[in-house]
Amino acid sequence: MNIENLMTELSHFVITYGPKLIGAILVWFIGSFVIRKITRALHTIMDKRDLDASLKPFLKSLSGIILKLLLIITVLSMLGVEMTSFIAILGAAGLAVGLALQGSLQNFAGGVIILLFKPYKVGDFIETQGYLGTVKEILIFHTTLKTADNKIVIIPNGNLSNGSLINYSKEENRRVDFTFGIAYGESVEQARKLIIDIFNQDDRILHEPAEPFVALSTLADSSVNLTARVWVKGENYWPVFFETNEKVYKAMNEAGISIPFPQMDVHLIGNKK
Image 1 (cartoon, rainbow, N blue to C red):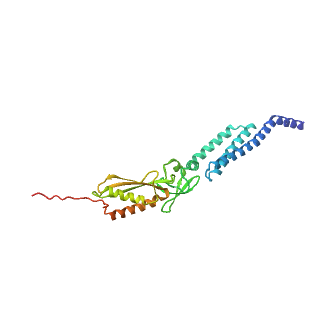
Image 2 (image 1 turned 90 degrees about the vertical axis):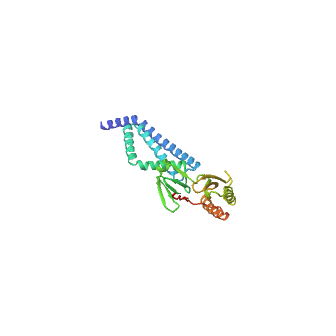
Image 3 (image 1 turned 30 degrees about the vertical axis):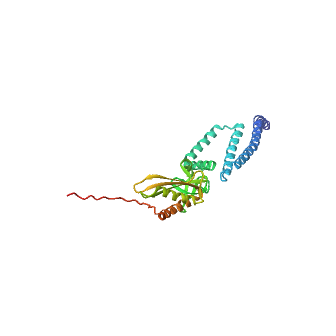
């Protein structure tokens, strides 16, 4: 009698759950095959779009985990497992972890955004968060800068992705701005010609997108100021800036053009008797 009851229960189980079990197994194998195809396709797309090497394995793993999780939930649902409570618990746990790791998750999301959209890359010279430096390393949670005086600055990616940033290396050419002061009474035309001649003798100075420019800009307290602008390759910015200042200073001295310094004239008026 016990054997008959056991066989009856077994038959009932097979009839009731057999089709569900077979369907779940089929869905698992087919789903796993589709997930492998999708992850390979994503990897191919990332290669074609030349994504950062450190971002590719992360995105591939993340997409695989999400798809596998969805497949597991689907298979368990097919077997009759009630998933509502499980999903609610999973959501609550995810919320708790998210609140606990809020700062880290912000930096993580910022790192993904930076690696995807590439506002800067390794080797670029940038200014951000009050720092100037060359990008040494871009990681998921932070970016490392190396300053001109050889300091290492580590900046969270959350701040970088949400804050203002100047990338001095993004464009091939940069404009160099100068201000040269001459004394009142000196010839503006002579000073302008002298500066233009210095620019024309420097092969590093470009004539596109604009020719070298010199014009009187300010009648200051102690000087007449000339503004000069030239275009150069990015790597020549500082050499041209420093060397041109020195050349103009020497040329003005040789030409007898006075370079003023801040001064004040005091007029003494005697008491009338």
